[in-house]
Amino acid sequence: MAISFSLKALATAALLGAAGLVIAHGNVTPQAVDTGDLPTLGADILVENPFREGGSHGGASALAVQIGESAYAGNCAACHGIRAMSGGLTPDLRELEEWDDEYYMSRVQNGTDRGMPSWKKTLDQNAIWAIRTYVESLPKPE
Image (cartoon, helix red, strand yellow):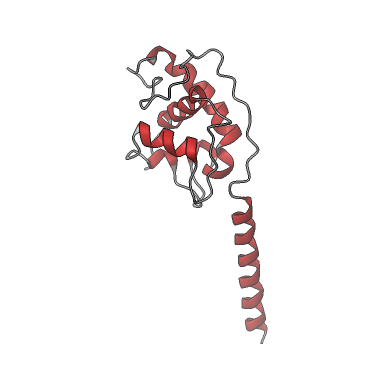
């Protein structure tokens, strides 16, 4: 009887803990991103990361990583994990090499039906590309 009660208590605790994670997922208050020192990209959405080494604004890549780190911490880390190391509810962003730049931009701007909000009214493309540049600068998981 004590074993049965312990298993029920353990199962209940696990379910309540999982419910708390599900409720917390996606509950992010957008944080402003100061991209003032990055080159202005304009209103036309680019389909290639301009801040990547060798990109059209490649000289800004170190600054883009710095701004992207701050933007990621304030807007993405709650769901995607610190330094993009997902806790399991969202993709590990360091492993998404198959996402080309155009797909990434579309995904971030429009959100997903699985809980990621649309960021197009909150983050300009300078901030979005800076976040991409930061994530790409992180070491890949082993």
